[in-house]
Image 1 (cartoon, one colour):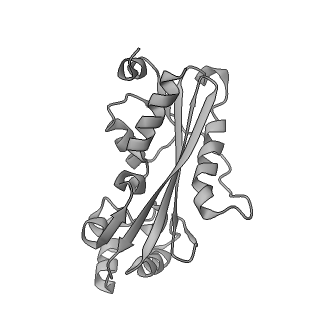
Image 2 (tube, helix red, strand yellow):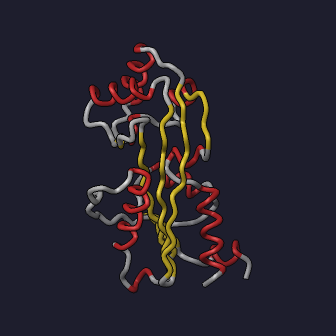
Length: 199
């Protein structure tokens, strides 16, 4: 059976409530249902930042281990933003923290890692996609405008690359743009093909 035929007949679960991930998965012309399970998202001591996103994605997939999901494709993901000093930049707690994060990203490169896990019929496949983003130097007026208008407090790294600040402020990007938004769609599609056609 061809992949598009097979996946059209396979129920898919997206284990994320992120509107950006929902939009990206929809853009692959896949039908799916959103089911979110709460897990402990703490990272083991000593884990490298570039490994943290995939670790959390795999922990999320474990929450769908019951038999009801055996014939479903379940997709989970987590995104980690890491600055030039290897500090993990989570979602900002307030405007002051967001302002400080954006000031630190200004004129510098940072790494975005999205970990993805896929479960289907007893198989679990996980991977990490990396993108390097460099901002041009942002002035304080631009940072304040973005914070005031877009309020990026639900976003790791205090910004959304698909928003105004990404359009005017990103100088270069190395890797997948969609990965920075929250789901590396091209790599995900390839992995879905592998796991479905091998089942």
